[in-house]
Amino acid sequence: MNKITIAKHHFKFFLLLLIINTALFAQPTFVKDSLDSYVKREMERWQVPGLAIAIVKDGKVIVCKGFGVKQDGKSAKVDENTLFQIASNSKAFTGTSIALLNNQKRLLLDEKVTKYMPDFKLYEETSTSLCTVRDLLCHRIGLQTFQGDFLNWGSNLSRKEIIEHLALTKPVHPFRYKYGYCNAAFITAGELIKNVTDTSWDDFIKYHFFEPLAMKHTSSTYNELMTDENACIPHTLVNGKIAKLPYTNIDNMGPSASINSCAKDMANWLLFQLDSGRFEGKRIVPFSVLAETRKSNMISNDVNSKIFKTKHFCNYGLGWQSYDYEGRRVWEHSGGANGFVTKTEFIPEENLGVLVYTNTDANSLYDALVKQVLEAYLNVPYRNLSEKYFVPTNNGRITEQKELDSLSQVVLLKNKPTLELQNYVGTYTNSFYGEVEIRLLKGKMTLHFSHHPNNIGKLEYLGNDQFLCTYSDLTCGVQVLPIKMENNQVKGITVKVADFIDYLSYDFEKVR
Image (cartoon, rainbow, N blue to C red; front, side, top):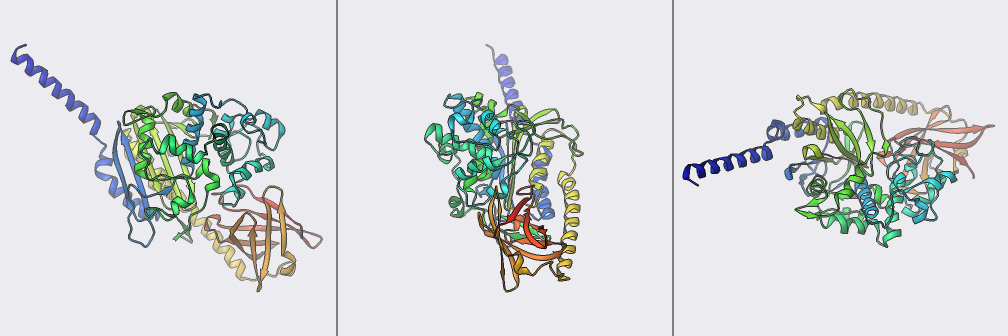
């Protein structure tokens, strides 16, 4: 081979490397030049104290960093290792765990739950006999979205007791008829792991995912979050101002919601998802396991989006929701816990993944920012998605605040209750929840919950046999609770908490 030929080969090789490197490392202008300023500006708009973001593309971590502070009013910064309660982003770990056991034939997704958990019961006997492991993981057992979380979320019940209460939860929909997001079903699926492996869900995900994916800061328990010095403090908005919250102990929600993680660790989870089940060249699970979690099992939402007009479907797999976005298939999940909302998304066709975690539950920036990054990579003309999310949200907040202010003014009128306050005092029971108690001390009425001893409702009379209830757990909000009267006697009370926890209201009968 002559020198000219050799030189041509060298040039071609150099050109190939240049093309590969350009394709690999070229990033959209928004990501390269505008991301930091955009995030800081929009965090201020939404009053988000702290945020973490990771972007992975073509097998590389492009961005992994924190913004803002771990606690409002304090100086400690959020970084890539700062922990957030990622809440329902935990579900993909549970779905992948069950898919792995299905691959190993240690349990089967389409086998009846009662084969692995003989005592398992739903409200209806027929549903119990039909329910498969897959049904648990794709939200189609008949319950309405969040139904039962009034009892389950942050309560003193064990996972076993939550599963037992499924037998007392009257479904809103027929079995397999309609999607209804169900945390208790995922808890049940996670507990099946212990039944077929003698290993707890917590240990199983640690051994199979946290350790091989070098997720060194990730944990699954309240105590681990409480003792980690680099953990975010949760926040919410009260009367339009940011307020600190205590951590909520959701160990009992484990397989549905209890993982604590950070941008750096979850970036590894995204790399694993986008590399067909490998991490750093090592096979962690067969790709068929991941493929099983991504199959569409249930239509999850009606699509009618004014913002995303190219979105046509939305389906649920096993811990992942999928939808179409600018002609690509996207897998995603969000998570919400008291004081945290988080989002994880990836597009295998683009070898692209994005996550955004925030330490306030009163924002949609966590979702808007993920979509903003996706649109930048998909060459969609720039539009400020955060602003598009914010305008209707803020209008809703203004309306809600006016309603609350109006109710507060009614309280100040000091309307006289139908009966003397002592007549409302007593124990009330609901067949699903159990007992609540109304107490009277120094002329002040309070509502107490047998399964949420740390949440106390302050009751103030409005009129028309209704009380305004302000919960000490700020996430539960402020609600109007009607009293049921018969023959000038108190017969019951209807209890409601914020939709963030449970959309339904629950009727309690006065028993003593």
